Image 1 (cartoon, rainbow, N blue to C red):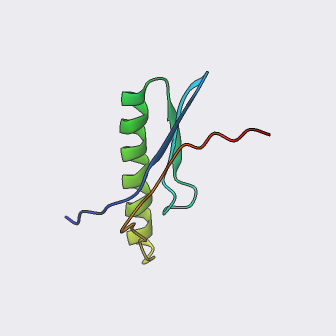
Image 2: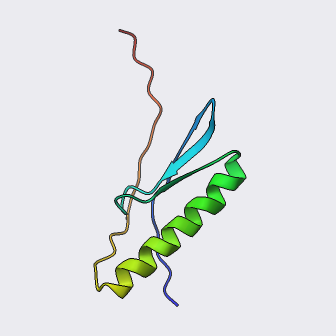
Length: 74
């Protein structure tokens, strides 16, 4: 069993939480709580990676991630 590292972006809005994995195009999910979206994105990533392995595709991983929240007045 291989272990992979991916970045995950989690956003909260009035409807709950949204999570995506930038390295895996199209890999995203949602959840009502933070805990739920974490479990959902783990499942989504696992299925996405299994599919890529089965199809002989490369699996991109992050080596470094920097994320910040920026407020901009316009």
